[in-house]
Image (cartoon, rainbow, N blue to C red; front, top):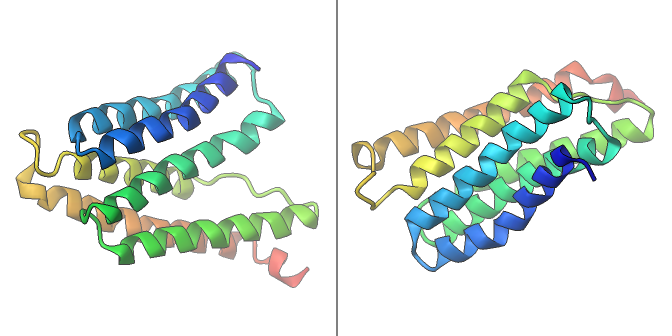
Amino acid sequence: MNIANQLTILRIVLVPVFMYFLLAGNMTLAAGVFILASVTDFFDGYLARKLNLITNLGKFMDPLADKILVMAAFICLVEIGTVSSWAVVIILGREFIVSIFRAVAAAEGIVIAASWWGKLKTNSQMLAIILLLFNGTPLEIMNGQLAQIVLWIAVALTVISGLDYILKNKQVLKA
């Protein structure tokens, strides 16, 4: 259990803490915990590459931790009425489709690496969540309009990255 994997596990452990603060209405603490968890995503990957700590556990857990954090945030934001369920259904749908697609590929011995579209998608989703968490606080930007714009950009990138995975690896569908 190296430092990179520990940071990934920390991200997962922070999810219920984040959810507690968000659902209790403390948006500032929720945002702080979410930002901390999001920052671990950068550092676990950086340290894994820099210190040659890449493991199979890390390859599996890192994207899973991202999905757990982001999906928990979006579902809670729907629950409190901050986000349209349409946006979250599109994002969840893409995650299920790509995860199943990757599982089928793996069963055929095909490894599908993360693309820069996928990384851009994750970063845009995290930025959208951070901006949405500041709705109704003194730190709110442009009366929440920026948060909504970034959210729909994240939804568009979610669709684009999903299509990118499938189109670049369509041989999986022929197997």
